[in-house]
Image 1 (tube, rainbow, N blue to C red):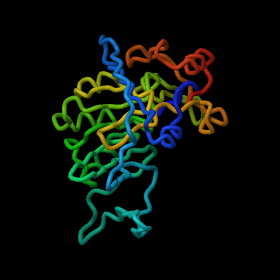
Image 2 (cartoon, rainbow, N blue to C red):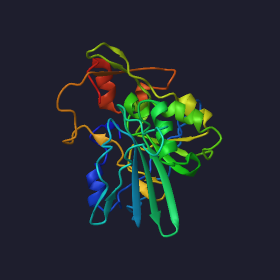
Image 3 (cartoon, one colour):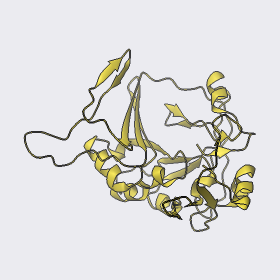
Length: 270
């Protein structure tokens, strides 16, 4: 999730502690509504019988690599879109990431969509080929607010109109996901996007801010925001600046202190 100040609980501490310290922090972020803080409660890290993760969008695929199994982990390649006739549709690989997680516990199945790739053209094409039904989604998660992770979101929501369950949780790590970003490196500077809160509202999703670890669809949990003080912090300056965009709802007073400070000084946030 988005990086945060050092006061937030580390994700590895949650895992080591068996999840007893996990707490749900829910903010209703739709325009005009007063943020609602959910009751804090400890939850155990959920256990499932089976987990299947489909890579919906990635920068490349190994089309001719064989499928294989190691112990209880099975990797199945999609392979070539070839048959007796010229190929019609094929998996699209591009800059960006999107994952679909399907977990099974007893007779319960949960489906979660994690990130949305760079373009809706690739995401919607691959969702169809891989047989992912939007109506089965129990939650959607955005890891952070960069175009290569949410670029396909708006087009996906349009294509899935009428299929998504009203109130489906859309989980973000905080207001920083809605900040406008600018790319400042070669080959040329440009807009790197901001999530449109209005598109989420039009799709009748429930926007959830998970700054602390949070149970998702009964079978999974988020890490919460990753502190900048961990070894996962940026080790060298990147080429992204974060700014304020009122239309999309980037509110400096709701951002962690370190991010607010960075925005004033205009260094990079990743």
